[in-house]
Structure formats: C-alpha cells, structure tokens
Length: 505
Image 1: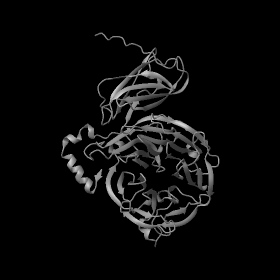
Image 2 (image 1 turned 90 degrees about the vertical axis):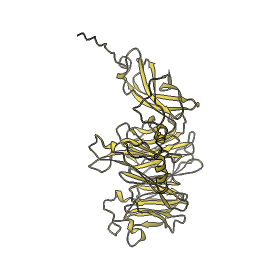
Image 3 (image 1 turned 30 degrees about the horizontal axis):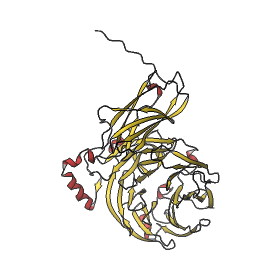
Image 4 (image 1 turned 180 degrees about the vertical axis):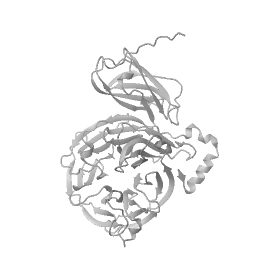
C-alpha cells in the first residue's frame, strides 16, 4: 500500500501512537455468505451484471433477468424472474450498463448482436417483463457506460487480437452516442488512440466509467477524463500517468485505476481532476499453495459510504489468460491506519470465496455485497460494519443421530444478544452464545461462538437452506450466514458415533 500527499502525513502521525493500532483500528469487514439464489439459466448464454434501482436489485445472468427486493434481514427476496426471449446477446464478456430512473430504468447490452436497449421501468412485483426498445446491428462493444443521454462504448485493448500501439495497425475508439431517442441511438463522436489524434500517446483504451458527469478512461499509457456534456465535441479535462486494465468507480468522488496487482484510488473533483489518495496491492499470502498466478479480478466496488475498496482475487488460467476461479475477497478499509508490516495488513480483510468458481459483478447495497457466480447464481455476502458470521456445517455426516450440536461464529458492531437458526422457513430455535472469543477470525470486534442442539434425523430428501439470523443489543436483526445442505433422507441424515474403548497400559 502506498499513501500519497497529505494523507501520508496523517498516517505517519497515527503510527506514532501505538494505542491506535489496537482492535478498534482493525479492518472491520470479515465476509460471510448470507444468501444464495440458484441460477435460473446457463451463465454462458449472454452478458451478466448487477444493478440497483431504488429498493430493487436487478441481476442479469444468461437470458434471465431476476428482480430482487432489498431486505434488511439479508435473505434474498425474488420479486420476479423474467426470461428475455428477445435478447440477442450471447457473449459472456459483452458490455452491459444501466441507467436508473425514478422507477426501474433502462438496460443497455452490446455483443455480436449489436446494441440492445430494454425498458425496465415497470419491471417489479406485479409489473411487466422487460420490453425491447431498440436493437442496432453492427455495434460490438465489451465496455459500456451511461450518463444522462450520453452512452460511451468501447471494445478494449485487453481483448483485441493485436497489441495496441496507437498506429493505424492497432488502436481503440471510445464511441459516444446521443440516446435522447432510445429508439434510434445516434453515434456522435469517437475518442480515438489512432495517430495523429491527441490521444495516440495512450496507445489503447481498456475501460471506461462516468464520475461526476465526466467520462474516465484508463489505457495502456495512462488515464484521462473527458467532458462529454456535448457528445458531438468531447474534450480532455484531466489526466494521470498511471495506466490500468480496469476501473473501479463509485460514480462520484472516487475512481480506482487497477491492474493485476494493484489499485490506485484517486479522489475525483467536480472539475474532472485526479488527486492520488491510496494505493492498495494484492496480498502476498493469497499466492501461498497456488501454482497458478493469483491476480486481482478485473472488477471491484466501493461500499455505499466510500469507506472500503472491495476487490476479489482470481487464479489465472495459464492457457487462456482468463480467471480460472475466484479464491477470495480482498477488502481494504480506508478508516484504518494504512500500516505496513504484516500480511494480511491491519487495514485489510481476506475472506475465502466459495464454491470453486469464478465470480463476477461485485456490487454493494448497504452492508451487503452481491456477486454473480458462474455456477452458484446470485450470492449475497456481508456484512461490513453490521454482522458477520458462519454456520460451521458442510455435510449431514457431521451430525450425530438422535440429536447433534450445530455451531458457528458471529461478530458485529454492537454486542450480539441472540442468534436464531432456521431450516428453510422453519425456526430451529435460539442458540447459546458461549465460549472464549475466537481468535481465528480477523475482525475488529469480538467474535463469539454460538451453539444449538437440534435433531434433523427425519428431514426429507433434498437440498435445504440453513440460515442464521442475529439480533444485536441495539435491536438490529440481520441474517448473517446461509448454507445449502443436501439431506439424503430419514435414516441417512446423520452418523452413528462409536465410543472409543479405553486404552489400558
């Protein structure tokens, strides 16, 4: 991690007071799997993304758009699920973006089928399915960003078969569209890295995002911001000499420029200027016991309050150069002293990801992080600054017949008053909070063990969902863990333990 400008001075002062390195200045974001919604369609059928509109979250996966209502408890509440039969896109790496309206919004998708626009304004519980507004053929992009009536589109240099060099042989364009009339998008201008254009020094653009109304683009030789308020005449307003392969944006005052091993976060001004803030690097501990190279996933997110950078770490497939599996969440807490000297560092929390798959589209809503798993479907992870915990049960063979103990851990910003365990929709009762604080979990607040005795011998055959819901001393009630468990059926839902005979000498 590197600290820049005035931030460096502040951190140096903090480090002169050892008491500030106590637990209350420990990164506070141990993640746990809160809920999973199984996939409704094949991941490989089309682009994928997650977006928020008011009290709804939209998840596109395959040709299915699932609409969720935001739930403070944390359990996923499916408002509706729509198969988009008219969707022509078939690329998993196609471009997707969303423009939120007062209710719902518009979905933009680009792939080999062209640029497609869908109306989601009435997609809600009791509403209607997405409506195709228009499809414009011959437009093939893998990065999209929208702001008002301006749509920016890019086929990135990272995906091109040639090495972008800013000459006529290999260069990139950011195409700008006026989408005032969604039935007929108009391409108004292009920002090109082809010489002799002024952007030729950048060689090739890799990713785009909108911050404070300005278009930010990172490239092979640097990063720049553009005023595109008039999409016919874009012009550069700010720049940084730091190159990147992807961007992490909160849409306003924070923009992160990332590559395989680092992310530099800049504060972004109302005039489109970059000021270096913090630099975070991939934890070395993530490479231990891994034969494949471990890199940052090319997507990330800032939490709602901008106080954390949430990244994922992938093993890279040496044959394709693409992610082979997502192994962990790597979360950096800006409110903690940026002190180096340990791994993981005190401002960093690493949480193993499950199951063994690649995860995409990290997206925060309050204390929860949504991801789209290639096999698992939409997952909810949490909860930063709220409650986090785990159900330490993987298979029913861990259960003893005629009654068994299920246990786990929980922590939160407030003292935990109660833990209630559910199987599907039925309560299994309240757990007992006991035992010494858990030191095997990285958390700023004390981690408590919970235990409950249950008898699940007669549970019917099939997959069931076990959920743990906590209540803290302030009365906040949150689901903090979820586990899908397969029960073979009565007679096979447990294991009979044989007592070991005493050993005599």
